Image (tube, rainbow, N blue to C red; front, side, top):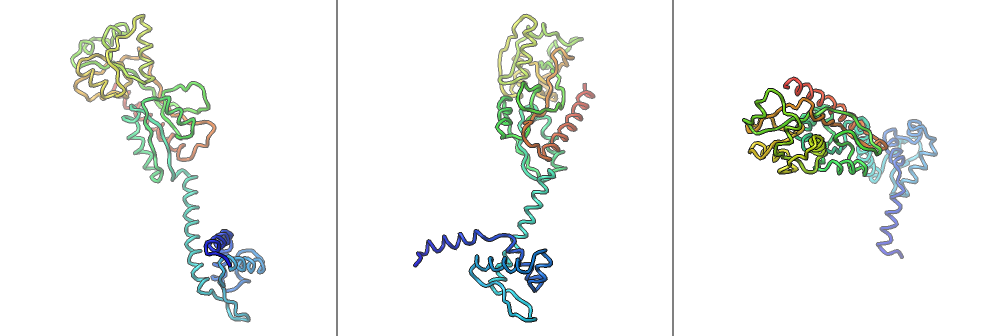
Length: 322
C-alpha cells in the first residue's frame, strides 16, 4: 500500500512527462473528428497520433477520447474536454510568449539599464527619454545615477548596466563607445562681478587668483584643476560639493567662482553670470559606453540612436545661444 504523500509524488512525476505535442494532438483530433485527419493535418502517421494520445491518457490516468468504432465520429470524454480547455489556455500563453520574444528581439519590449550622472540627468535624460519612449513605449528604461563615474564603468563590467553615459575617453578595458557631444567649460561668477563686464574672458592665470568653488568626485573637476595648476599656481579651492546646485548656489552667494561644464549650469539663475571661456579649458566629451563582449539588444541600439540625435539638437541649440 502506498502512503498518500508517495502517491502524490508519483502523480507529479508522471505529469512531468506531459509534452506540448500531446496537447496539440488532442486539440487537432477534437477539431478534425478523427485520428486519420488529425495525422494528415499534423504530418504524422496515424499510429504516431495514437501513441501520443495513449501516452497522454497514461499521464492523466483518465480516458480522454471516446472511440466508438465504425463510421461513428470520435469524441472527447468529459476529462478530454476539461484538458482541452487547459490546452487552449496553454497555447494562448505560448503565443503571447512568442510575441514577447519577437518584441524583445525587435527592441520593442524589455528592460534597458542605463547609467548616468548629474549633468546628463538634468539636461539630456529628460528629452532623451521622451524621444525614446515615443518609438519604444514598451521598453522600460531603468536609470542608475552615480556621483562616481568609475562605479558606472564597474557596473558595465559586471553586466549590471547595459549602457552608461561617460566622460570620454575610456582608459582601456573591453568597451565600445560613441561620442555624443562636446560640453564646453564656462566660468560661473556672482551676478555683477567685474569679471563678467570685462571685454574679454579672463585667462587661466586670472581665474586661479580667485577663490574657487569646486566639485568632489568628478572627472570634470580633475580636468579643471590640472588646467588651472598648469599656470604654475595651485587653485584656491574654498569649498567642494557633489551637487551642481550647491556649487552654483555658493557662487551666487559670492563665496567664489566656478569653472564648470556648461551642462551643469542653470543659466536662468539671476544670482550668477556665465562667461564663455572660449576654449581656454578644453571641452569635456560626453559619450555612451557599453561592454564590447556582450550582446547589445535592438532596444540598446535604438537608445544610442536617440541619444545621438538628442545631443546633436542640444549642441545646435547651445551654439545658437552662444
